[in-house]
Length: 320
Image 1 (tube, one colour):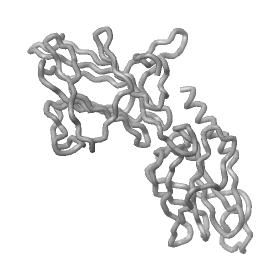
Image 2 (cartoon, rainbow, N blue to C red):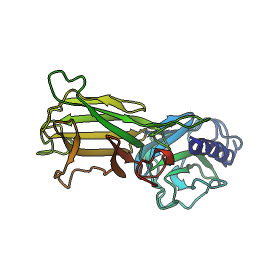
Image 3 (tube, rainbow, N blue to C red):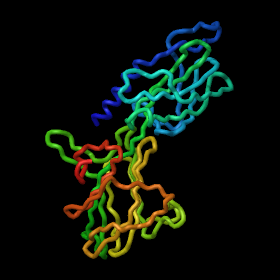
Image 4 (spheres, rainbow, N blue to C red):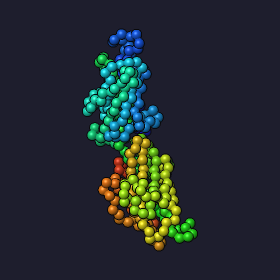
């Protein structure tokens, strides 16, 4: 939470350094007139996530950009400049590519911009600037801060089993993201996303091997599904048969589309003990491995935290 607060304060500080040049001339103004405060230039990044006045995009992705001016302008180009999380001011220039925007009326300009900042900084949640140059005058630059998000969502899951409510036999599985209680401070939720925010989770369980034909498992019907758009993660399966192999797929996603997708097979013995089963998944299927998995006190704990953004108290397998 403290890291995200710092990021928001940084964006506000960076915005104070935005440089603007001449505004587009209004009707009746001659060439070179109309210089002054920037008014009415609108940026739209199709598919970007906006929250609290801040624009977030997925790192490395290309987005459709629309820039609308209050009056006709010529020679519009755009580029994204990687600033880095701890920069003191915007970086003008230095863009690897300069996409030219196109317009039919010289008011609304469209094009594509790639937001790739991974090589510019060691950070994975990076404040950069989208710059647009317009007109024939020098320093006719307009910009907005954009947060480039490479961070994957994180969670520590606790998995327990019980036959208590399975009156006809079998075992139910309960999965929850853990919460660490902190004395004299707020409890720590071990589920979330540091950068653009947590968008949701989903789980599917199959009683047949689901990757025979396609990786998205749409070729098989799950026997159980659950999902939510917020943390904590919590669900209970129906009663499952002992000795039978099941296949589970868990997905975590943030607000710009960064995902963690975990696939595993498991079975249950006569005492409702859960055991993971080694399976072959086609190489073309893109799944993630947990950071760690450990069994203690009759429960399994699984950790997903690839960017090490989760609080250290959420680790259950030793230090990250």
